[in-house]
Length: 126
Image (spheres, rainbow, N blue to C red):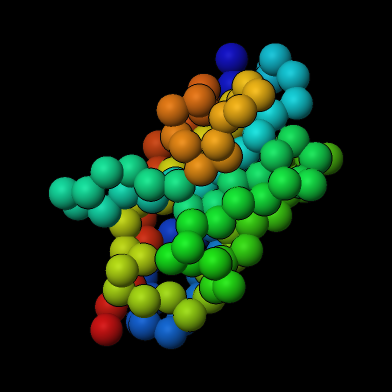
């Protein structure tokens, strides 16, 4: 069983920064991809940033590219999301997920991910 836990959410003014952390613990079935997803009220969950097993393949949503950076520390099973120049449209609940994505899966597609955290709230005010 894998347990995923996010931390680091909070409230910030537009233009500010936050850094989210995600720790995966427990017995994983093998190397895994990891991604950050977010959901705003009334909207579908969307992929924000994700990384392949070894970090050689990283994907960002167009809306965050150049502002957000995902990084993973495999030794500590931790994945980070550094968010800069935040704007009000970045407000939402941010979820971390891990999974062993099959060939052809898209990193930013939430469906193939197996284990999800409970989410951390990010609120950006103008």
